[in-house]
Length: 366
Image (cartoon, helix red, strand yellow):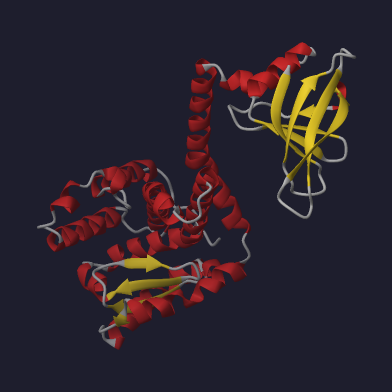
């Protein structure tokens, strides 16, 4: 049996034409023959060198489809060949069975089974592993990391927001209204900020800044609705949602890079799955913040219905803004970053029923 390939001596990068064949003088001996190459020219010296090898001294790489096969021996010496079938025959000749990996990949049923297991594992990792890992990391993250986001509001002021046009009296009234509740959540270092330049909205930044836009203040019909939204934003701070969202997006992006091995196209490849997954994570965060808001309303003895009513106000407000936008009207729930208003109203009803015969608990200060 003769197997053609090339030989590397382990000391230089030269690849010399070579072949291995079984040796007639011994049942376990092989002959490796290769040609010399002149160091001073590209010409191959036709003089051949021969090495005698024992099969037990060879380390034969497992077969992986039709990729080149390596046989290592001696002092980092290699024999490399594309003739995988002959290598398999050689192994069988000396009583060595084919590799488990090659046997595994040669059967379509095992390949299909492996694909199913891989897809299931990736789905479980994305659905449960990533959120759980991000939550653990965020909870263990030093406060100084959250404080590093302090410049976020400065950036938003430069790119998006405008100074508030609310009167100083109205701003002070809202600060006085929210002050007792902010003190109860002092661990999150919350601070109310007023801005214009954006439609009716409220948002919480990781360092504790909570922004109310002028349009939002004008939209709410009473203080109970404003406090309902405040508690919702405090829920985001308590559960460190923005930090967890950044961690989750980073994990998904890294996973895509590991799967594709392509850094150049990662922006395109990672963008689509990351977008869809991030929408799901965002909805989960919003639901968690909704539940926290309803709990805090109950503890503050404020009607829980104020949460449902302000959510309805916001939906009606944005419906007027996009009434001609067919995509916005027809967008299914799984592509919405927030739960539907119907779901939030249903959650409110469930919480009202839950708290119907329950006394308010002490305020959560952590």
